[in-house]
Length: 288
Image (tube, rainbow, N blue to C red; front, side):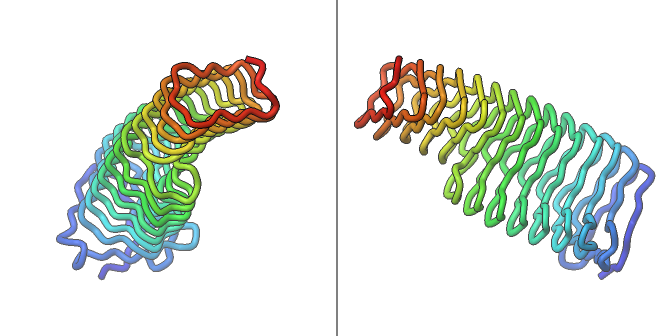
């Protein structure tokens, strides 16, 4: 075991022998690895025990970096990346951290095949753009995946289960959620607030749109679809769960196969077209 706090300020590759033998313990320091240069690769380390506000791997103002096949545990931030582009985060295991992966101003990068278990938050993204996040396992966390003020990302084929909250979007737009992103979570699979023009398709679990969400496209999903508080001009196609509409208008529901559609609280001008439903309940009566 190595007791180190390492600052990397030039391009290099750090290669650990294996996870059992190459253990770097931060001794409750602010960071364990702090990367401040482009073109750095960290592969095959066990990284553990930062301070209560510290970071296992900290990356700032970089491009062309790679974090591969590491085990990161017992840190406040497992990996923290800010003001960076063209990075690859692949094949890591992040276990028992406050936040597994923290991203802030993170652009044109790849996050794939990582495992996030028993963190308070699995992945947290602020202002991320043009990034692909796929084939990750996010499970047994308090919160699975948060996305704030982020655009033009593709989130696909992630296994997100047994979290209290699966995916939450806040003020995020033009993102694509494709194939099997959610299942078996305590709170609806994808919950959106003030988020527009997102594309959610072929995902398992419920989807909820809150607070002025508009122009989102939701199709081929299982689980309840809910619209609340002035969510408008959304299109829901081929839903296989129920539909719940509360104080939301001018939405379209097309070719859904579900047990019920419930419309309440001043919801109007919603279009219900070519659906196969067992029960349509309205209170008060819709005006459309």
